[in-house]
Amino acid sequence: MTLFDLPDFEGHEGVHSFYDEKTGLKSIIAIHSTARGPAAGGCRMWDYASSEAALTDALRLSRGMSYKNAMADLDFGGGKAVIIGDSRKQKTPELFEAFGRAVDSLGGSYWTAEDVGVSPADLESTRKTTRYVAGLEGHAAASGDPSPVTAEGVFRGVRLCVERALGRDLTGVKVAIQGVGHVGAYLAEKLHAAGAKLIIADVNQVALNEVAAKTGAEIVSTDAIFDVEADVFAPCALGGAISAATLPRLKVKVIAGGANNQLADAMIGQTVFDRGILYAPDYVINGGGIINVAAEIRALEAGGAFDPQWVATKLDRLALTLGEVLDQSLAEKRPANLVADEIARARIAAARS
Ligand code: NAD
Image (cartoon, rainbow, N blue to C red; front, top):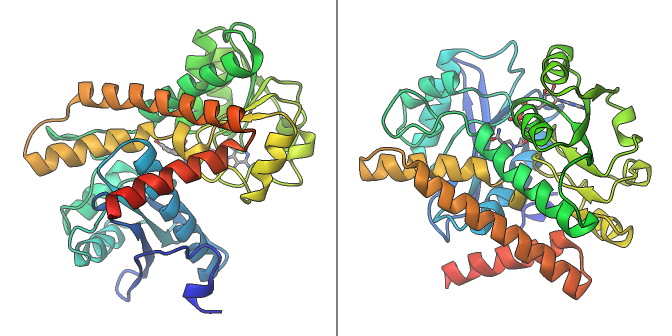
């Protein structure tokens, strides 16, 4: 099978692979679309089982960024980078400088930022070799850690879904959070402050203890999180949380969380809908982080400072967009993920023409 025949290829404008002998960098940068502007999306470092797995991840994440940027009403296309390697063992400043050279060779058609396994400190190294990098700290345009903004968008999305599906506010609503890393931990604090009852799972015991101490959350195993009695399931770990194996176990009325690529495949969205579960499409509800990053790119390009008001306005608009997707899904009796895909594709096609 060639690249063009892969199910996830889906019209990518460019797929670039980079190898640097000196640092061992193995990276793939996938650019799905530049119709709305330069492709923007983070860089993930992960110990992929194979280069095929890395390619599939890059393609899915990159297409997701096109859709996410369109739904967040940003003048950016979609792209994503993956670095193949164990982020706990194989990171060096030189590796991220080599990655910066790879990004720079694309001449500004792709802007990078952080994602799972990549920190602002790593991107400081990348910045030495390319200017097409955002999500940094310590300069006037800097947007810093996007996770709090992502979590704020997800929190509003959970609240909206609970209003639609359960007709109530968050007081006493039980939310099961899978993954309490950056986004999950901020989300937990916001939900706790709004009166929700939390059940949390993570492979990281330290993170679990910290969140439980702050929020009174009940801790369960990473397997048991699918079986708990809860109103909302909030996937905030890695992709594929909702699958044919896990969906029948969920007892919730709402699935709304921060993770990318929550649905193991597009078909599962139909099953979610048929089971009467309200699903907030992942790339709509979690667009807060890229809005924050976009504010930095905007400021860098204009030579100005980061504008939190611009971010707040875009975040408000994103909440309205999520409401529109949910309304259309309910009115047309079609899965929300398909409705969101259609709107995103239409926005990209409109920009192309
Ligand atoms: P993170 O690495 O800080 O957190 C992920 C957490 O999930 C970690 O604590 C990890 O231990 C945990 N985890 C891993 N496997 C697990 C499992 N099987 N069960 C339960 N927990 C598990 O990453 P993050 O920045 O919080 O991002 C979380 C998700 O949200 C990712 O899918 C990411 O792509 C997505 N996302 C993040 C942002 C952002 O602003 N950080 C923006 C948009 C989307």
